[in-house]
Image (cartoon, rainbow, N blue to C red; front, side, top):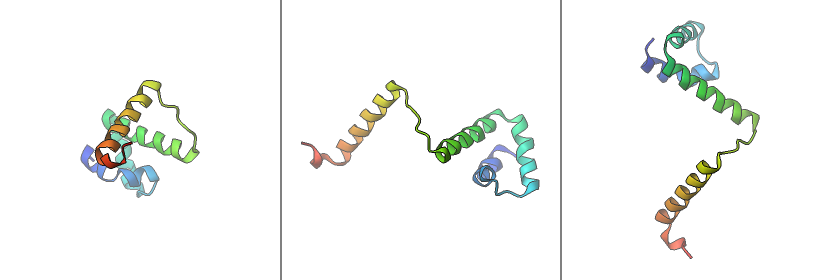
Length: 83
């Protein structure tokens, strides 16, 4: 299995809906592929955070940057809503 094949079946793998032989191929590939390990690990962590329903505190600088970006995009998309 190569990286492209792994990414194509990734959702089913993370959800646990993949046949055992394919799971074994995933495991073998992940053992030797750090970029794919990182992707799978990040997806698992995201799913865990979502399922647990725990809020995640954003770093202040990131929160400010995100807020500014969203406000700018809102103004671009809805200029008539400006007061």
